[in-house]
Length: 357
Image (cartoon, rainbow, N blue to C red; front, side):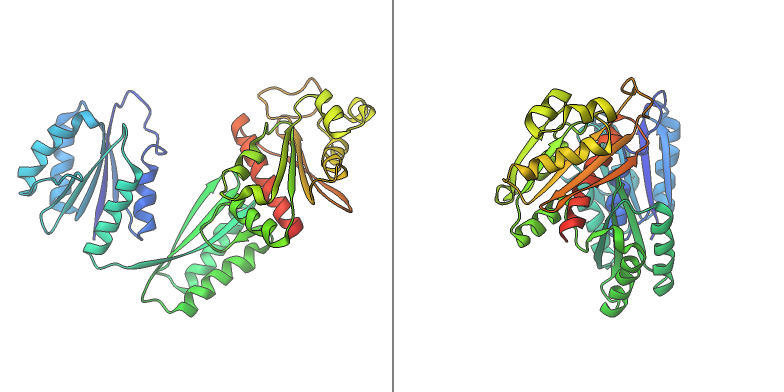
């Protein structure tokens, strides 16, 4: 089975693979892959016609990523070419070949997933999925584990999706594969990445932390500086979080850290707001108030400029507080402001998980 992705867009704009990544991911989730990805300017009709004719002659399935304004033109050309009509779901199937139109302006990712499932079922492919979720695992270690997993079953597909250090390893296998083999593959990943793993199912980091807090009957509070309430925001996205979440304080200024958390003014003057000592006192201050069992505090420099000190952009301290004291972690994250803060949020949630696991 051969698949082709045709991307039609304005070549004056730099083609960004992130735009059509949902198409690639939808296919990968079904154990399907594109043999060719063709990016063509939509004001080059001759090139478009040549590519679509090639798709008709050489590919079983074609997904066309295009502006909605091209819908009627493409339908009028493709229907006589394939000898079949599009249905209401923008899918054409003449029995041997399939075409799907996915619109770059307002296309629904769920439709792309549906098309991938349709192809999978049409060709009699049935897949199961297993997951390993990690935070902070070095890419080289993940790839090495994937290579070991492939040795167990060369036909196995491992899809790796990273979101600011929070990594989903999706293992796609045939439902005819023995369960023992699949379990061995999962164990291979867990053995190699154990200290980074937080779940073996497709759930978010915040959901996993909520489950654990509920199991331990613990309450959590957050004190955030440079993450600006992001840790708390992740938590409140989880239904039922009110059972375990006491409060979140966005203590961005030094004055707020002193007044709301009891951070010593001399600590800030001597070591700075971005320091291990300040992070410790932020987390410990929440615990001292007696309303939570575990706390997490963040302070750092998200950029794009530093804080008038010699401390670099990306430097951050994350502290996890418990009844017997706080533990502080130092990181130097790379990237722009969003990357640094989102990565710190993921690490903060993961560190709490590790401490109460």
